Length: 301
Figure 1 (tube, rainbow, N blue to C red):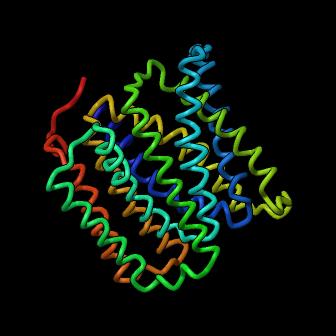
Figure 2: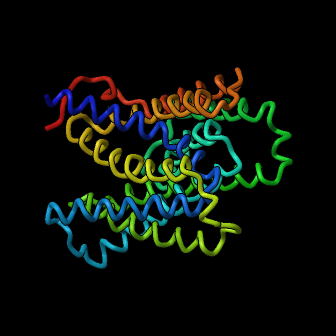
């Protein structure tokens, strides 16, 4: 039974996070991006609040811990998730997911810069593979950068990756130990949701609610319930059964699923060069983060 639960948890993370970019693309078709991001996080906070109240775990976390959660929320949810959502108003979900897959490279380089990790020959090889993949992405599409909307989308995505990397490095550097992850996540979701909804009201040119399609609303609700809450619980359940390094393999599967679904459902064009780029980037990130523990069958706890 435990193996069944673990398998279900891993499949949930792989499939749900693999559909995130697709769902965002569908949601922003008729709903302004900041509304998608803000409502997603706010609803996730409400769901998390009900779970905490049911478990009788809801409580004040203290000003110091709150400060950590607000910094983390600002970097990972408002900046990384929010800007990725805005970027998908002008970029395809397959391109967004592939470029976002390079975020571990930024985390690695940032960690090397502040002394958390050492630079190795293997890491250099991985970096060359990733940059080769990026070259293949823009091989035929370099002229697209002349389009200001496309260029702005790429710029936002780069800032989003920087936010995700900064949040990850911040957690590593501060060595923050989470006593109640669900409680911390509630504060992160709530803060991000409120700020992003304010952004939506300030920066959305047209947010006529009557134009929001059922398909886009459904995608936004899916992101809240599954993308933010269900996948989170599944991910942390998996972490209690196998090592973090083993769970990290899911990141590579997510990208493949995302690109495949973008082609299958949204009919996005996937060229031979794009496939080569995906292979190079995924292999490059894998080489940089390779650890012998990845394929060991040991269990934790």
